[in-house]
Image 1 (tube, rainbow, N blue to C red):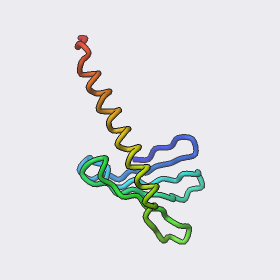
Image 2: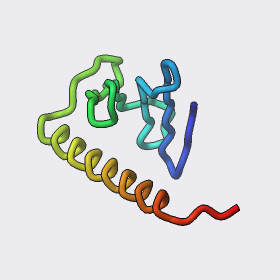
Image 3: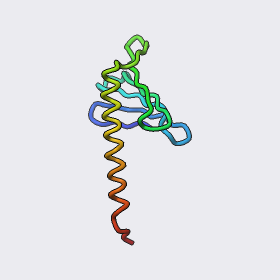
Image 4: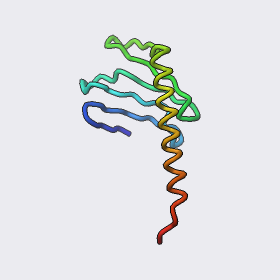
Length: 92
């Protein structure tokens, strides 16, 4: 699946319906600078940076902790939104 918004393009590769690998072109130049390998849950992932020469390196510990915190916060907001929707009466 390919998604684009603003200057950012992401490509998601799924296995059995679950996103396992996501890469993104952050600046719209056609080069996918970052990629994420996912585990079983949205909170279980590793992110890497791809250099122009094709080599890769993991993001820094600080970047990882910040991203992990934001991911956990977003996941909790989504869970809360689903709980609120489940509380609403069904309309048929």
